[in-house]
Picture 1 (tube, rainbow, N blue to C red):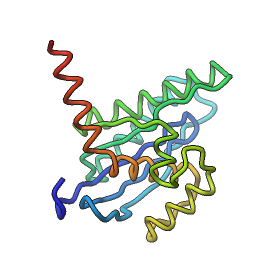
Picture 2 (cartoon, helix red, strand yellow):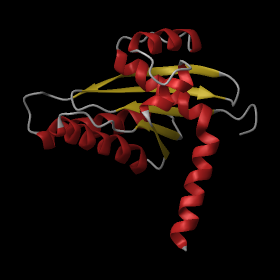
Picture 3 (tube, rainbow, N blue to C red):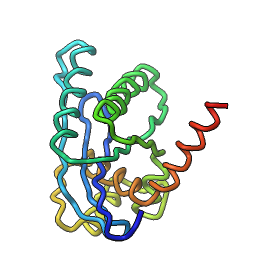
Length: 176
């Protein structure tokens, strides 16, 4: 990306109870905070309706954000297979919503996100929040989910060229 060409990026930290989102703008050198928040689903609802709440909330946020690219955290597998499956379904909504809006969508591992923002792949939540405050001083983050979403967006800002190249190579390989 050429310096001076501004791009808006939405980072999404998927979760069934709370999905964090954060929007930043970058010119290739500088980062600036645009907005962030949480989308929640009703704990008492059936899974399908909770997923619909997340999807509709993301569609609304993406439409209002002006973002042209999205980044989503990859799922980590924990010992509870049921919880991992539900997280995977929420992540499906986090991938689908920006794709439905025509945004380029990239995925990043939790360790790469932490390393991109903090410098260590096993950073703690408080370290991520502290670095978000340093990198985006105008951000008023109210939750770890928002901070994580902004970290995902920052990771994408740092790696978006490599991610675009990887998508092009994958498309070419698929064509044979």
